[in-house]
Structures are given as C-alpha cells and as structure tokens.
Image: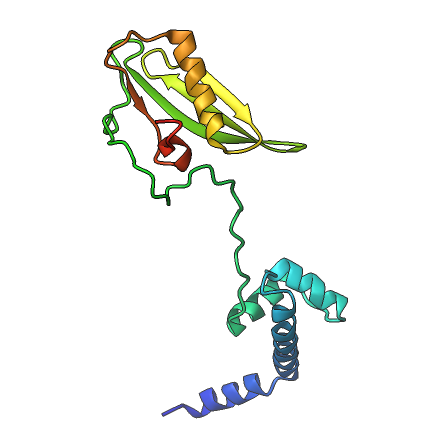
Length: 189
C-alpha cells in the first residue's frame, strides 16, 4: 500500500527528463564499455576506461565511469608482478635434512653457515649473486656472481668460503640452504 502523495512523488521523480537522459547515457556508456573491455584484454580500470570513452566522444567524469563500471560488473584484471625465480624446488635430486630447524643463532664462528641466491637488475640484464653467510659473525664468508643460475654459481661461493675460513677438518659446521636444484646438485653436495 502506497500513499497517494508518495505515488505522485515517485511518478514525478521517475519521469524527470534529466534523470531519464542520464540513465540512457549510462546505459549507452555501459554498452560501449562492454565492447572496449575485451578489446583491451580486460586490463582497463576506470581512469583508462574514462580516457578511452572520452576519445570515443563521450562526455563523462572518471567517477561516473567508475560507478557505471561497478554497476555493470566490469572489473579490470590485476596484473601479477613478474619476479625472477631463483629456486627450483621441483626436482628429483636428493635433499639434505633441515638441521637448523629455523634456529638461526650461533654461539661460535664457523659452526653454522647459510647460503642463498638473489638477483640484481642491471642495464644489461639480470645478475645472480650467491652468498654464504656465517650466522655467528653475520659476515659474508663467500660469494659468487654470474649471469646464469648454473650450479657453478653456488659452488664458487662455497669454495670461496672454504678457502677464506678454512674450517677445521671434522668440525661441526652445519651448512644450510634452500632446496633448490643448484644446492641439491651432485657437484654441490
């Protein structure tokens, strides 16, 4: 049940020419957006969609485009940032047990070493840096840099660490690294 005055107010509101004009413009914009969206591989958010609509002759604001996109269920796909992958854990090589078990503190030098690889962007491409760190002194005891992730990158870093520190034969030195193919390779083991 609706009051008489409520009915006439509703009728006046819905029959308002400006509102009808805006509604039809929004519908036309939405149709155009649905054509644009697949053309741009669904990557345009409201700012770029707005620029495209303006280029096609529509007069609108970014906020209006955002409202119409939301009402029409049009969303931009978010891009995943590309990252260099330094660890390849999907291999069939034997993996050493985790002796450190997240205990990254040491009471004496040359008792716990950790190793890892990182990458450095340069103007000529990527450089990969392998480092061996003594957990007691927190010093890099061996490192190596190369343009590829081959096993010789990590073996060179380990050789440098062994030559620089010369841990005693039979000492209880624990060497910890990730489970990547370079560290699980036969040459490294």
